[in-house]
Amino acid sequence: MITVEKYPHPMGDAFCCTASVRGCPEQERKCCGMKKQIQTPFWAGLAACALPLVAGLLAYGRLPGQMAVQWSGETGEVTSLMSKPWAVIAIPIVLMVMHWVVYATVHSMVLGPRLMGALREGLGWLIPLLSVAMYSVIFAANLTGRIQILVLLTGLVGLAVLIVAAHVAELPFGSRWGVQDRFSMSSEEDWTHIHMVTGGIWGLCGAAVMLGSWLSPLNAGRMLLWLVPMIVPGIYSHWMGRRMQQS
Image 1 (cartoon, rainbow, N blue to C red):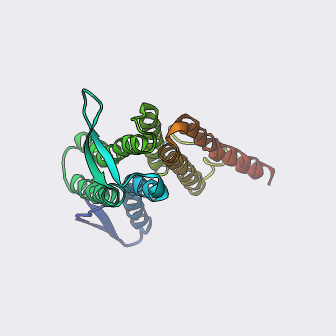
Image 2: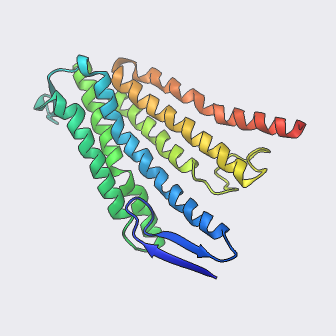
Image 3: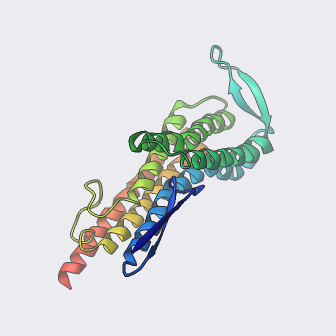
């Protein structure tokens, strides 16, 4: 007999299932797995909101005491300044809190499955998107003296890679979007292993692209080279498959 309880979870799904199982312990593992998977995008989004804080601290000595944070849309002149501690430390922390609030609010709503999925994907990444776009402009302008569109584009590419990485790490066994080779398809455990490795490496690549473009705005295009290590999980999985075949 299986008893499933539903209760609000601030960082998980609209509910977290806890199964009390008699003779069927795998159900409890599945429910716990769902909870962990649903949290992966939250932590990835929180990391994206925290990256401006990391970049700001690393470049703190190079940033002006009063940082430009707003410009005129017509003339491009600076219209608003903010003290460095506020721009580098306080605002990123506020954005991290906002991300938690938005994510928790969206995941506590109970709507239709399609609408719920769209809201989770859209609103769940809204604050990280605003954070990356805003600080791509702020860091470029304050470190080089002018807004660099390439830095903005590079930052958004890094965020896109981070978003994909967050979802790759939770792909269900046998998904057509996942790595399908001898090693990954040999068992659900190996599938989970290779996709967790893939998600981790891709997430680091996306973060490196964003951080690199912010810290060195004039070399933003070259920071896309950090995407090259994304092929490592595929090579690793192929190598593990060959070892499995030989053993």
